[in-house]
Image (cartoon, rainbow, N blue to C red; front, side, top):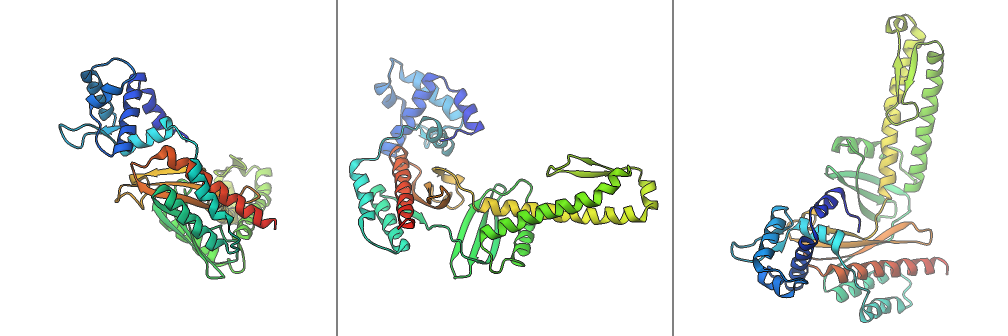
Length: 359
């Protein structure tokens, strides 16, 4: 797992003893579901320390927001932030058990030709092995798109809804570019829908990349004469935040041709910025991650139920992410066991789809 900046900073504040206490509290809680007290930790600690010393360390961890006390006299349990730090920095992942491996591999032993039916079986096997609710996202469609919609979920999270010409519907979550609003997403969707007929997502990406290059070339042609005559100069040329700085505005007003060019360039810049945003939206729609763990409120879908989601993408023969498998369960999941199972299942699905594509 990748440790973010906040997690790394927290980890740096923990000495060896604090890490040991923190790790044992989390592992004890994940195993029992009950608060862990200082006396319980003292009995199994790797060095001779008193219960009072352990209590002081636990209070420090509580101050940092990593542990919490359900009751005044009870032991401690990890907070969602504590679970996140444990998963990212201290989790020890075990190999997939032979029995679990065999149960998952048996799913792929049938001659079932329908991918949807086979993925249903994968979901059933994954749920049985982990005793959690399984999540299986089918391979991404590349059929022509009928309609596209962007929905803002949070400042750093958005949903794209893709309706394909064959009636298939897909929802994908992505991180929008900084500064984008619900209004700008609606405008992007409206613009795409005005020209989407008969085009796949890949077609759309190529189309908007070509539009960006075309608009850039038009701006260059119009600006060249103004720059050569000393009326304007580029700032940050070729970068997303590029600007054409106009010199001698009084002289410019007397030059009708340049005034018209400037107005045309202003409109082209607006259009270029919009098409750059749309091209980035389309690229982000196809992005994916490795194994990801969402704990409690980190996932808007599960924040109310106190659940976690462990999810891993699977890839086709071209190493392109086309779907995902996952497990939903309580926040006190046995992450060390569940993470490799989800990862192994994703690899199996990817191999299965790759083998079928070569048949």
